[in-house]
Length: 119
Image (cartoon, rainbow, N blue to C red):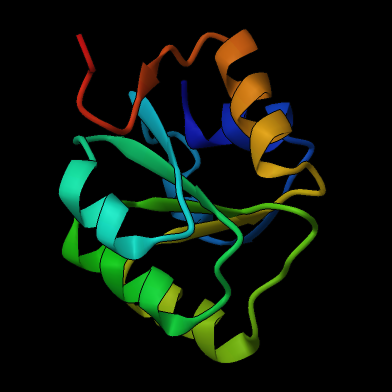
């Protein structure tokens, strides 16, 4: 699934990162605790979160996450958008809740979660 597909599936608004629209995304991680993201995230992941503070951008940058989706209609302030742009991170805003956004991505074919598979 590409970033473009994610924007479409989530009826989202791309806030920054137009150059990443054709980037392939392999997994999704829904979390508001950035410590969970750091502990369990995989490569090629989109982060879905409701956390609107600079820590979300910094964690994504540190974990090499190239796409963040803000759920529940939240939109980050201009300084966060600028920080994401400076770090090559695409930001998307969607009206959907975390639950529905993750479900829509799953239904659209994104099957791998951002966390290690639990056996």
